[in-house]
Length: 243
Length: 133
Image (cartoon, rainbow over all chains, first blue to last red; front, side, top):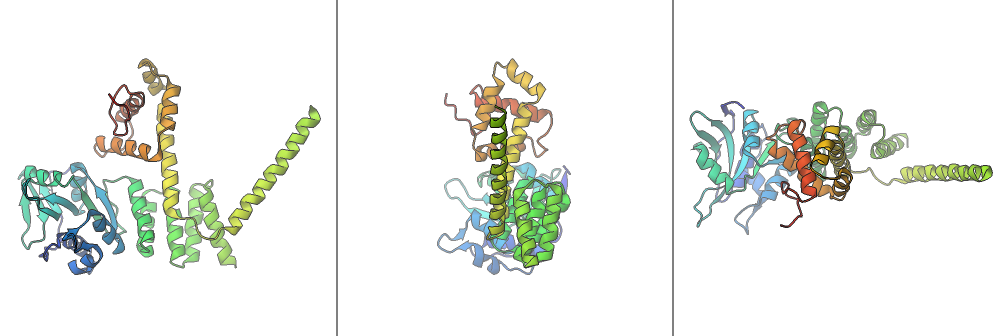
């Protein structure tokens, strides 16, 4: 683990009232090059009745915007992601015990020697916190963290299955192009798991790319010839190509 | 006896042929693509269960289990009785407590032994544990 890390290029955006959640996602997506504002995200995530954004809507809105979104929940995961150059959205309680102040921010760096954690926190200045203070505020948010990445990049601290599930979730919200990209990325990283090619075949089929679907499903079959789901979908695609 | 065996074989051949046709018919009549999400759930659960069972059957782990006074077959039966979700939870906890490293090696051995002793209520390491003390 490097003793310090700093991710360049995460914009500082002044949040509108109660928009810390949408603003956090907008900052991370703009860092990755997307043209998305806090209002765009808020339309998909913010709950006016609650005056805030639920954790599940943070995940769901990121996916509806075509991003890979996976949760992290430990300090090790947080630091590993930041060290790998991936900003992490964290859920904190910045208030006192009797007056909780729930907040989302984006961790963009840390420095052990200076005892500092750096956050883009919905204000125009970077927020700097000693590790112990950050730990306390994050602990009160149950160490909830979210890695939001474009689908051609993979988180470094989560299990392969969680990334597969995140890709399938992109299919569920009909972000088939993003799903296909993520399946391709995963297939390169884990070539011996047929599920990546299977998902790629299904996503390409949903995009109307029958040739591409057949190619991916054939690769899935080559990785493991025994899987009935792969054979069934391959037969289905081949029948459609023939008919 | 010989005829009986033969006819049984004949029945088996016919049956398996029918089964093959039935399978093909199902495949032909498949109305839509089988989804990725269901496949991920099914095969991940299978792989998780197999991985834990394989570990339990390793000779060194089996020796440890026996040394603890636990019947390995009973331990396997208890593992088999856990739901997919519970096995998923156990593996997640193993990964977390392993500080992000791959769940392979010495530490994993210890986890598997803890799992066995948990299953038989000697220890309470994993969250799933149902033993009440």
